[in-house]
Length: 277
Ligand SMILES: NC(=O)c1ccc[n+]([C@@H]2O[C@H](COP(=O)([O-])OP(=O)(O)OC[C@H]3O[C@@H](n4cnc5c(N)ncnc54)[C@H](OP(=O)(O)O)[C@@H]3O)[C@@H](O)[C@H]2O)c1
Image (tube, rainbow, N blue to C red; front, side, top):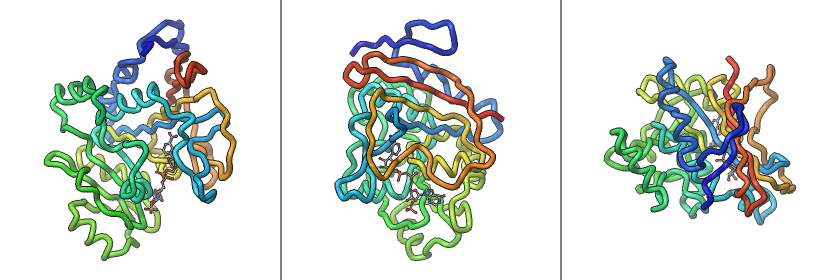
């Protein structure tokens, strides 16, 4: 793998290594400056803003294989390994039961990420980040492989959630937390996470979870990869889904890199943005 990419921002432009790029962003140090959990999210997008493509039924969407790629995947892992808790969705766990094309909840699962395992363990962190599942429906099972001696699975749901489903999931080993009346609310979610001692949270979930984090003002950083491809397709799946953000959420560019080797040599941009306070 050619490891060299070009840092475009901050200036001056210079060649840097892909491997270790986002470890150097040092999310844990960033979190230390806050009195609450530091929250970031990550997406890979086509140039027409798509993060997923129509599934064979034509009704829903599924993983966009044309834009997922090993170089972006390496960076996804570098962010995940630094965090205390990974945020995912009820929909992802429903899919988990039938098999997922991309395993995002067991990090450094692949031998190529052995260095990331060492990175985490040498810092005295738990072997895997805990899990925060956002769901109101609760119609999934807790996969036993996602529980461990030093790994907790928390489900953030609403006060209107079904009591039988709650009991069933508790019996399967999940911890249930209420963070909203009808919908999970970002402020309540983060208040719980902070109180439970989590300092860094990383969302690998999709556009509705990003909306809940952004609209409630708790998203601190957004990582976005732009693959040099157009995808088209309906329904349209972008990074954000939900009501108009009024006022809009303002972000400022934190870093930008050009990877000329990604997407079979087409190239891609790795961007990160910080929320403007
Ligand atoms: N390209 C990328 O980087 C990228 C990244 C992430 C996802 N994706 C794609 O995006 C698509 C959607 O992913 P996703 O379903 O994980 O993401 P999502 O749209 O963020 O999450 C949807 C699910 O999360 C729960 N949820 C979200 N907001 C909620 C709220 N405020 N209150 C209660 N529950 C809430 C609901 O679960 P319940 O239905 O259980 O209540 C809902 O079904 C997938 O095709 C995935 O492949 C792409």
